[in-house]
Every structure is written in C-alpha cells, then in structure tokens.
Amino acid sequence: MKLAEKIKHLRAVEGELRGYNRPMTQMEVVKAMQEELDASISQAYFSQLESGKRLHLTASSRDLLSRFFNVHPGYLVDDPPDFSTDLLTSLDTGNDRLSTWLDASAAEWRSEPELSGFLQFLASTSDPRRYLALFQRLATLSLEELGAVAEALTSDAEPVAENDQIAAYFEEFGNEEVL
Image (cartoon, rainbow, N blue to C red; front, side, top):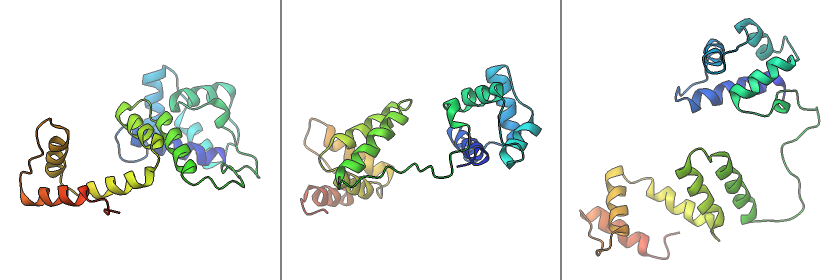
C-alpha cells in the first residue's frame, strides 16, 4: 500500500472513531492535530501527501502524524512492491484462523472493554462460528425483545416471556437443532 492510500485510510478510520460516520476532511485533521498535539502540518502539505504528489514525509511530520493517528511511525511509508499482509501457511487450521482473528481484534479494541471482552470470549470458545450464527439470529430481535430475553435468561427466577413471540424464541433457541 502506498503512503497516500494509508493516509486516506487513516483519515477515514479516524472519522469513524470520532463518530463522524465519514472520513475526516483534511482540514479537520489539521485543526484536530493543532488542538490535541499543539502542532500541525499545513493542509496543502497534507493534500500533497495524500494525493501522492509528495512521496516522503519529513521525520517530524511522520512523528506528528503517527501520534495523531496512533500508529507506529514505520507504518507511514510505502510498502515494498511485493509486500503482502496475508500470512501464507500450508496448515489447515480451521477454527484457529477465526480464533486468531478474534484474539487480534480483541487486542485492537482494548479501549472498548465490552467489545474486546466479547471478542476474547468468542476466541476462547471451541465453536465460535456457532455462537456467531446464534448471535446473528438474536440480532433480528427488536431491542425490547432482546432485553426481555436477556433478562429472563439471566434472572434467578424462572424465565417468563412477556409475549408469545418471545416464548417462541425461547423454544427455538432451546432446541439443539437451531443451526
């Protein structure tokens, strides 16, 4: 991946992380850098980097961008032409590949304890795909129905369905042939 592509990607990720639901504009990045790090680069320089007109960063710009985007400074260079992020192996690892991905994702999202814990739990199970299939089915419930199911399953009392639809879900999810 080229430096320009990496910067565009980081701008998009940062916009999502900040709740913009869109990539940050170049100007927003420059202003946020100034506010948060008391240093910045010009928008023109940022534009040249992102468009590929400028191929290399100065050491100080690389340091500033890496601190702002929270990446290692070594990430902010072009990858070699034959570089691949895929790990090649001749081993058939089955669930190990998914578990490895879940473990890595849990570490990546450690700043979000609920998500990180959930991903770590899935990674530690013997059949994470089955859990994911069941969670996918649960995701079709409304929040109210899901809350009622969760409350009934986690309370000390016997599960009491608030309506017939929730009772049907209890019966269905209690069945071992769900999948």
